Structures are given as C-alpha cells and as structure tokens.
Length: 128
Image 1 (tube, one colour):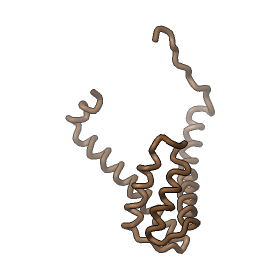
Image 2 (cartoon, one colour):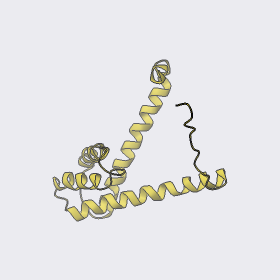
Image 3 (cartoon, rainbow, N blue to C red):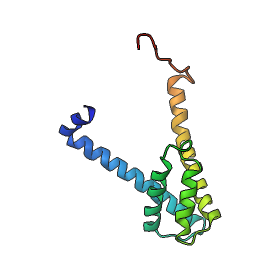
Image 4 (cartoon, rainbow, N blue to C red):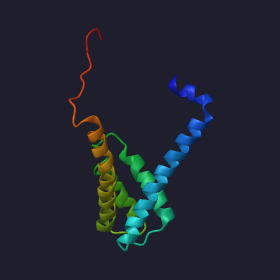
C-alpha cells in the first residue's frame, strides 16, 4: 500500500532514484580514488562493475553486515584485473575506515541533539 502511494508522486520517485544512483556512484568513485592513492591502477569502469556486484553478494544473510563475504568477493573479482589479494583487502579496509569516519560527525551530532544515549524502548507484547 505504501508503494502505491508513490505512484502519484513522480518527483519523489525521481529524487529517490537520483539520490540512490548518486550514492552508488560516490562509493565507486571513492574506491577508485583509494586504489589510485595506493598506486593500484584499476579502471573506473572495472570498479563500477566489481563494487556493486560485491555489495550485492555481501547482502546475502550469511554474515554480519557482509563482513568477510564482501571482502572475499571483492578480492576474487579484483584478481580478474590483476590486483593482488593484499591490495584488494587494503582498498576494502580503507573504504570501510573512511566510511566509518564519515559517519562519526553525524553520529556525534545526533547524540548532542538527543541529549546523549537513551535506553531502547521495549515494545509491549500484550495481546499479540
């Protein structure tokens, strides 16, 4: 039902699609820039094929947040371009560290605006 409501809101759908597409390309460009910064020469189009495929496979419910699965698939796919396992892990690890570092200011802002940590709310199970 919720998705049917968006059928009449074309601007919201276009905005959501554009932001999602931009988010994916930003991750691809970051991985490519990290590789270049490490002296690993891999084409942007190759990274554009490898990263989304590795992310998709890492979403399989066989690990916590894709840890290990993403890295293994990324290593395997990057080896097709002649990138060693150590270099592929270095790219993946640097990307995860930078991703976490980019979240920290927003997390701190959230903590400050909410007055710190709060205890999680428990749902009432009565009558269900």
